[in-house]
Image (cartoon, rainbow, N blue to C red):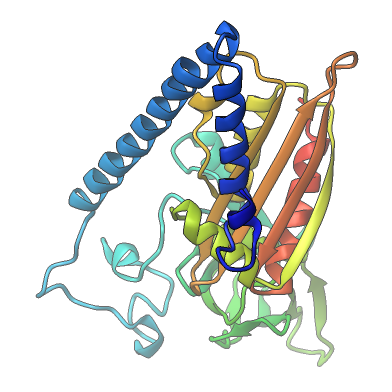
Length: 357
């Protein structure tokens, strides 16, 4: 032990602690409880851990085998280069083109699954009021590096509206790729416009907009309808990924931005809290929950995800259930390559703690 603690050997603290435990077991060989924990329970826990890791490797290998791969002769659609008269530019999508453009059909602007009728409605965002002369709603879809908005403009008046123009403005991390042209709308007529917005960096962004129109051809005055702001969540661009424990520790020491969130929630079940965190942040939990079976009162778990820009996001969660009150206490530490990811994930963690229903 002295050699391991010296500068010549420079053994890690884990090895020194392990050696101390081994010496204690040897000096207390008559202690049956210590022998049971050391020889049987530890072996059982290690066997369960290795079994979980092996099952994870098999699951990932099966996912790679069944992953859909595009064929060599598949057509690649560059919709930004399409002519204005093509169906793509007019907002009509050809069958199967959404997959070729890289859109994830299972992801929407709020990260929900569009498999039920209720979630289909949540994919459409209402941007104006029902009483406004021009009703506006947008269908948001997430690509790998862009956000595509299918905006519907509806004339709810009995007059012809001239020069109906959709004007959008974005924050610095978002770039508007298309400039929608002004058009005329007959009474009760609607039109659809497709707008692409490029995501240049993974930070919390917002889209602001308004609709300008001219109600009568005899006047030059133009009216305006201010649209509801659209805020993009960073978690929509996070992809659950897997990494080893050694690589996780290496990245944890390399990443400079950290955000620490104190756990203060009405949720009393550790498993329920972790399920909500994983579902809301779109991250992968690297800690196997089978090691936490048996009503354990504390948990330390690691989560990992990568952004579409290959930026790493690490989360360490330390939870403990209080004996008398049953409330969860602890902290959540977030580390990432950029400040925007760390702050946005921290806001998501704080919002999860408020949802107790």
